[in-house]
Figure 1 (tube, rainbow, N blue to C red):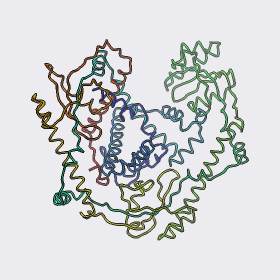
Figure 2: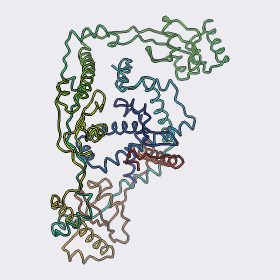
Figure 3: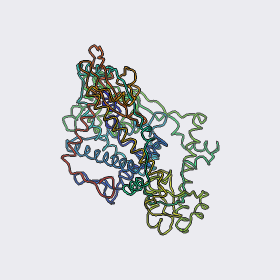
Figure 4: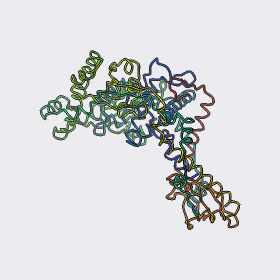
Length: 629
């Protein structure tokens, strides 16, 4: 239970509940993810398709994210075809779950307003400069992601809708004091154990494997000795990031940019206002607002009237006072009226999406521009990035043209873009290094045009300002390696298998004997348990602790026995001698344990909800992606 709580607190679904799912895709190709295409679908949910293009983009984004987090370890994992298959299936399942949640939220009538979408975008750090929303930064990043503002706003609306649904589920869970007290007792419980290790290597060392046994094992398991379909690849890679390191920008260039874009390097004009809000859209609401305006014109105090009459109760408590704001933040109608006022003026009745407002302007903060010296480094970096982007797209065009014109070699294309042709030894789809592991690149490498016809590929985009062109210098088909080439490997694998079987058989026999209260077998084999030691649930060896705390409580002073594996794969017998209960007072419901329990319950609720949605929806997977079968 305690382990599940800790796992639950860090689980993907708790993170989904607390965060915006879309942000993991925003700047690594979300435009393609959202736009989709008419291609073969990867999955369908009640007739609504997730296209193969959407799936491949989402898979690559998640792969890039994991690669940046785990580095070489993740590369090793991706060398296992079974892991790749499971990884792809997990990504597709999450996309199906997202769509199920979205559909259910829409069925329940949940809605996200334009104001919510607007406020979310304005608060995103990716679009901010010096703590304030920067419209130029916003548009630049969207262009790089291949999106329009409308497309991005709709993607945010969809994601906020999912978040709204999940938060509604999360908010229904709570923890009771007696639950927390019982869980605390379990968490602080200790156990006295002894251990006995059966070293698998010792059993393996004494195993003899004959040539006939090895040959028979080889013939029974040919898939274990299969050399996959392989190619020798040549490729040219271009990256905007690499171009940045080769470009220089002078102070004169930076100063010219500064003079041309001074508005970017300071604060915009800001206004401090109060307002009185009358909610509603009809004539009755408008009449009420006009009546309040008449009172103000007759000498009523704006602050006191806001406190007693404004439907915006939050600002009304402060006399209608709002925070400082600049253009592009408030409702357009409200903003236009506020910026038309002079200090101390009161507006006429202003209609917005929220109702009817009366606005009083309290103060104006003039725009301020930072000195060039304060923003010099920032400008140098920005100009360098812009020039790198321009140079990159010029090189991309040249590379595409030359690779097409000279399709039987990459040398001319490399010379045209001042790049180097890189080559590999034989690689397969499961062990392709670096950029060649990208699904689109692999698809090109093993396509008939590139592999069999010997042509250069088209320019392949593997990320923002990151492209590659590939060709195949040599290839060889999938085949079972001859026994003579793998005989030693076969014998080693068979010896390990036999050693593990013998060790497991010995462990089973010992365990049965000990549970019957007999210890003679230990003496016969010269085996003995270690000295007793006290462990906690979160002991140093998690595998031992997990097995020890899963065993039943000893009765009448008789030890209870179990078996597990240690970190090296050896078999470990455990003798549980005593359970030491913790003395715990009543636990309050406002501590970290309560939060963990609530998160675990929320996770369970989300998973149960998803299971119901799957059971009551028609979900199908296409055969296009083998992981979906």
